[in-house]
Every structure is written in C-alpha cells, then in structure tokens.
Length: 159
Image 1: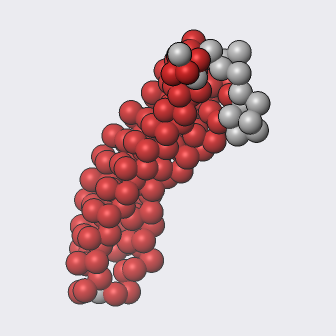
Image 2: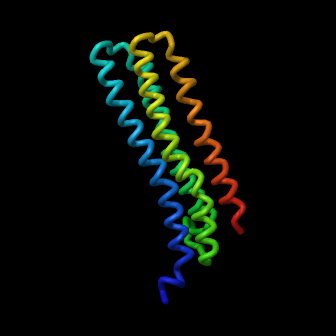
Image 3: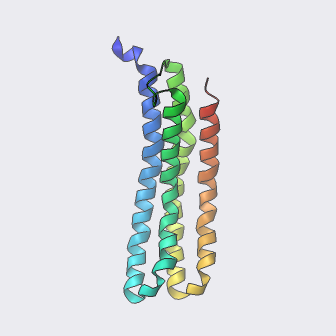
C-alpha cells in the first residue's frame, strides 16, 4: 500500500507542519490583539508608537521558533534535500519531538499577547514604566525558549 510505504514521510511532514502552524497561529492571534489595543492608545498619543511596537512584536517570536523547528525537521530528516528514507518510527519520532514547541509555543504566544496587552495599558498611563512591561512579557517567552530547546534536542537525537 502506497500510504503505508510513505507513512514515515507523511508523519514527518505533519510534524513539521504542526511545528510551524500552531506557534504561528498563536503569534498571529497575539500580535493582532496587541496591535488592536495599541492602535487605540495611539489615537490618543502617537508619540508612544515605538514603545508599543516592541510590546506588539514580542509574541511574534513563537511563530519564528515554530518555523525554525519546521526547518530543522525537514533538514534533519532529509526531506529538504530530497534524500529521505523514513520509516513510520522515524516519522512518529519527529512528530513527538515537535510537540513541546507546537503546544507550548501556541500557548506561550497567546499568553504573552495578553501580558503585552496589559503592558500597553501600563505604557498608556505611565510611559516611563515600559521596561517593566517588557520584562513581564519576556517572562512568558522563557517557556517558549525552553520548549524550543526540548524540541531541537529531540530532533537532533533521532537517528
């Protein structure tokens, strides 16, 4: 059966797609939400654009981590170079390896967006407190970085 013969490739492609898709969706949702709130603040004070742009950009990093993981899966598996001979076990291993960044990346982006929205509110009233808003939003980023590390180390351990 062609499906079973290609199951390793299919699972590996699914792993790569989910690694890019879930954190990307979370980042898009969060960056959009922060942008909406920031736009409201900017109607009152356009001079705060630079301070708010940083807060809006922060939740976008998880999408970058997901794309990086997608690239590593395709590169490490041989699919990027067209030299893939993947068993279903290899495909399943890649699928399991991406789970940390796929799941944590999604939720980290969404929650970092919520913290960034709160930071926008802080900057709206007290612009001199921007660094505190950035630190609070960056704390959420820590878990996306740990998830990225877990996925990358898992990907590179697949023989």
